[in-house]
Length: 406
Length: 143
Image (cartoon, rainbow over all chains, first blue to last red; front, side, top):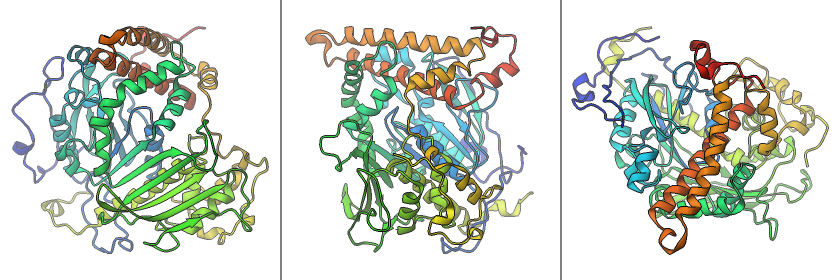
């Protein structure tokens, strides 16, 4: 699959560095391998992008930011599934690898760019949330290299031992997802992102989710779960939370407003805040773009069980950006509710009627499949697909065109 | 809650099935009707259920070792964190927040392992052990 061809326009000297990467273990030299044209070029359809010339496939980079244990992996599985196939850990190699691979996508966990391992962080007195614990220079160089079609040797952070393991080879994929605490923290990395998402979980929901995750574990109690959240909050608020102003989409997960005094947090209110003016990203809307719409689909045509479903759509400002917000409160009980809702949403970037519902069904056992988290994550997957197809359809003339092989 | 009978697609306001072209090989219409509505979304199962299910998936000693190690680490690190945050000096100190961050890290690693065990039929070490059958980790686990 890998065929060294004529060097990439970005010459080797501009990409390789003379300094060796220090990984907290013996010095390791990065090896660059040049890949061109081996990836299947996706011919853009052109219709939704307004561009008809097909060109070189390149790596599209998507960033996803969220606190650990906040459903990011579910999100990632939904996103990668839109592109076909399940993203799985690499076969062979380090079994503690955090990377996921599918035919067209690669998911990199940004914990791999920890500068300090667990012992190191303890000595320095910094949490993993602190930028000082992370190697943004390496993150930038490697994401830049992958985006340019160059493979990298990426470190592996072993979450079991808390050590930095020897690196693994990452080939440039069609679609690269980088997920973690700081995908948008460093401005250079931010500039490399073609699209970015921030998953913003409110404190009440975070507590409910972490309780669900941990309460059966030996040693944990409600108090310890709460203490852990509170102890990490200052660093989280200082270093992770501010990234949401840079995101193209923010998915807010909030307590429901439909059930007075609800503590269970099973029914959720989910708000998708979509930045206006992002290239190749057309926000989803209800009924009339740019207006404010409040919609309760349950009624004569559709009967829902308690507490029902409530939608809201409207323009807004978010950190002084123009945005459109689509909000869903409540949960789906039946397939036809989902279909009904899909048929009333616009700009979903589906390729056929019922595709969003079908995607939701594919992963009916994932958490959030019956509420806005699953629905909006699925929709974001479809939007990313459209964005990806538009980007690769962009008219571009590069020296690689002349060197086209296979 | 979810209805118990399967929904036929003909009862829904859809165009003819020829409009639903799957991007993969399978026919999406068949895929949708073949999933009984009651099983459509099962929500998040408690980790207790996942533990029971995962017992069947553990094939290699290495996986069992990892699970036990993480469980022990969670317990230990919660104790360490409580100790680090004790008193006026401990509370709000760097040591306190780092300790709870470690608790979060191992809790997340444990949840990740449990999910991998619950979701797949293969032991997470399967491909590693195919290449390295002689290592201690790859001894088949006997309950």
